[in-house]
Amino acid sequence: MDRPTMRVWIIFLLCLAGQAFAASITEEQPILDEPVVEEEPIMEEDEVMPEGGANPVQVETGEFDEAIEIIEEDVNAENPCLNHHCKKGKVCEVDEENTPMCVCQDPTSCPASVGEFEHVSCRHRTHYSKTGFNHLYIPRPFGKCPWPFFSFYVIMSDFCICVSQVCATDNTTYDSSCHFFAHKCSLEGTKKGHKLHLDYIGPCKFIEPCLDAELNEFPLRMRDWLKNVLVTLYERDEENNLLTEKQKLRVKKIYENEKRLQAGDHSLDLLAHDFEKNYNMYIFPVHWQFGQLDQHPIDGFLSHTELAPLRAPLIPMEHCTTRFFEQCDSDSDKYIALEEWAKCFGIKDQDVDKDLVI
Image (cartoon, rainbow, N blue to C red; front, top):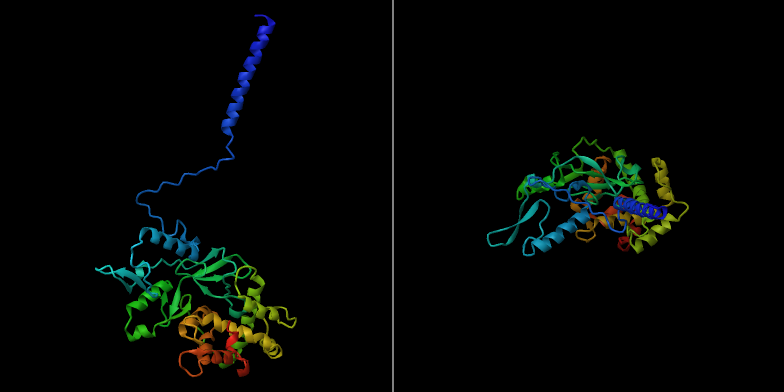
């Protein structure tokens, strides 16, 4: 074979080898323009996924409820229970004529209690502290934790504390509020059931008696706490709608006041002096908290139920809570009027203004 012919064959073989090598590299390179689709794991027939996914603890209450509604509308459009509301402790069932009715819930159908756990990503929702008024917190039951847990946001962090157990007025610890209300429903119509209420959040514990001197100190610390809660909400509001525009205007004056006592673990003497010196800063926070509680119905009076979102988380941390709110009901009619509420916090009669409940 002459040299020119051999040169042609060598070039030809090199070209073939280059194409083969390039092809092998191309096969190993992933296609970046097309998304990689992972196959869903195949579940065994007897494996049942828990409601809300493999880890229901991570499910946020609002999203979870919305998902349920969408599914029910598509699949059970003719279910008469869809638009039939039952109070806590009862569930909807249909009778033989397909008419919806509320019946007591079976406690065994309540979600199992897992005690207390941390739940990520609930910033700006609630604040939690096991030391009461020394730190800020705003109890928002069921804020971000899965039902039936109560949610507390740990200040300056990104997680909640989710608590399920509750203590009732019969000094019994229930696994959750779901279990409590189911039990209360079973006592409906009885004297025992009428007197049974949810007392506080967490397992039952010994609550020290509240001494007279301690009772006098309680409003000093709670007033300061309410003011600091509002200031904190104002600082973090941004676009989270934590406060209305009218509320922001009121709080802005407090926030920008150079005389404002900064949040901290202050002595009772300093708190009393600050209230006397900067009295006007405390008027709106007291009215604001009343408005936050007066919701069902909005009538200018706080019932035991309306007071519960504030009272129930406080009792285990502040042992004078129960006695303080009982004292606020000066006429013993089991309702706390705005005037009674303001007087409890030392607000003068002439400064009580319904227009500040905004």
